Length: 350
Image (cartoon, rainbow, N blue to C red; front, side):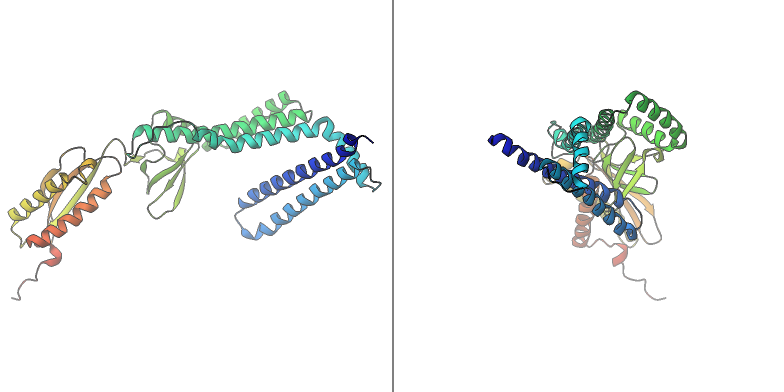
């Protein structure tokens, strides 16, 4: 007996087992992903049952194919295996390979995009924001294209009329678009946000009552993470007005109150001196883009005279600068015995 003829069934069996494991795992993961979108966790057991049922179908198909490969007279597995092998030989195997290639490309897209050189620096720059945003949009668009093209090739391999299918999808899409106008508006608004570089990944923005860092952006949705770590998904059509807090330059507005009992000229002199010292500090001067704007007395409240200074900084540095100056001026006022409202002694009794 030819050794190749003896070895061939075992190689085919190994191929069937490998294919069964891949199909079983892929289908089970897809079922779990679909189940994760359901709002109630009480449905999880049904999705687990669906996953077990899928594995059962895969195991049944694998046993049938093995019965056909080794010519085992086990019915109805032998008959099922004969029919299944005929289908795989004509169309099924090509379809499975098409799906495998599409899935591989789908998973490779993020890796390939990470190979594209982008402007990277320790500083926050518009070119870096623009590059990350375009990369995010490209990733979502390429993944959608791979799924659509892979699906069309798969259905074409099964013998379906792709022209009629595309025409039908186009007509159905036109009909659905009237009922999904918000989705169309999302895509259009997202396109103009990207085209005009209104904001991008890494920017800090405010949309309505929500403020946060843009973690992800595509043509349909903007994903923000706020200071408390909460993630907000904002459809692009729901962004009529957006406030960008990290565009080109930023400003820290610092108001400090001093007591009415304090000599105001002395307080202003100390306030201005500390602001200038802070600006010339070697550890901080790289964050400033211009000298501090000392505005003097900004407001008179019930218990304090409010002094204001404006620090113009690089994008996203205004919060750190504001916190540091408040710390420094509190320590300086304590050293210079400058009275602030919290330390003002009460008025003497009448």
